[in-house]
Length: 488
Image 1 (spheres, rainbow, N blue to C red):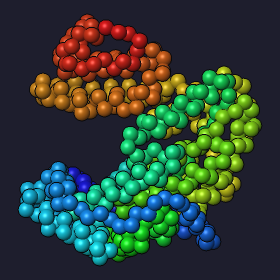
Image 2 (image 1 turned 90 degrees about the vertical axis):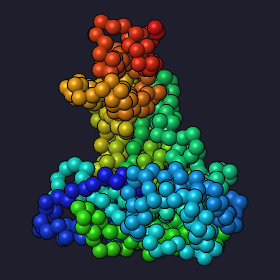
Image 3 (image 1 turned 90 degrees about the horizontal axis):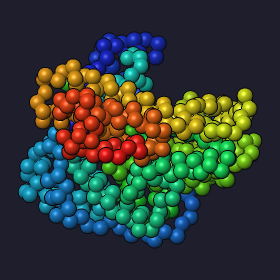
Image 4 (image 1 turned 120 degrees about the vertical axis):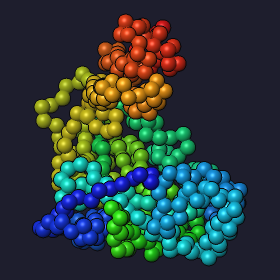
């Protein structure tokens, strides 16, 4: 669910094929057609049928049935709803559900449990309102808009309970590959990056070459084949009753685009895990879980739809040959899942600080014969080939400086409390995200982040520039960033 103030202004015009339309009704209908067929990219790019990967056999204990949901759990979910989130197409407002939680929790729980018994989900819960959100680029191009999906509130409450049951089952039986970080307790983007980074640093310390391919998939979540996914769940020991429930969960799903008071007609969504759903990310993890088995002699790490393939060794030729072989196998594995490689966004990188490198590196190529681009920086944390983090820290410094400049320019408009809150919400998260990853950078670089942090504190406290940094921390009660070796 998105915030109630989530809004999307339709473009004044949209390109449809070779024509441009300015009619808002036509624009909204074509947005819906575009978004509802996003998962068809594989089939459009691969006219020759590709055999799907057969579900692997497994010895995982069976999940014989879903457990009955307790009304106390539903009550807790309803009471913790964000009342500022938007209602879905059923117009059932989270604020109302939160307000009436003690009254409606029991009948809603009965409805949830009835769904388990009948293996049916109310059709209204399978209808999504989609808001087109411009993400940059050409306003006429529908590809430059991101679909924000809003599902009925009750469907998300229900899915939360189902998700807890299946993730508990997966975790207790160690279902997910150790090479997959996302949606696992204690794992996240930072821990995933740290794992890869530690391997690269170790290789560099050993005077080894280390190369990596950063794999990007086109519309991965939208491209999930339901038949293959049900087969995956079957192989993991889900009973026929559970499989029947999931089959119904995927069937008869529709979406409408909603914007500026207009609502498109409904269109069927026959592929993908539902955007904005609670179950979607977990089911996608199930879908790609076996991909790691194809990595061969290389290492692999999967985080949602981001995949990193990497290896190291004393010989550069051997490293690149090994990486190419593993990349070929991974591509075949993705093809078996009917997931399409986004060649333009799939990149490779050679990590090296001191070893000799030829002027022209051997190309890593896709199965279709396209050469991957070698890059000097990649990922949300901007990795560079020498792991200096210079580019990343400059990016953070520029981003924070821009925001602090805006705050100082408008400082007369804010109370002390407002200043304190603004910095905590808009500045500190930028400095905190992934800080354990790039703290190995040089003190010269890390001091640049100390400097912008101190500027943020001066904005809150009005302290003069001559104030020592230790005194600044005391004024706001915040710790130092611990970026440099300095200690108060």
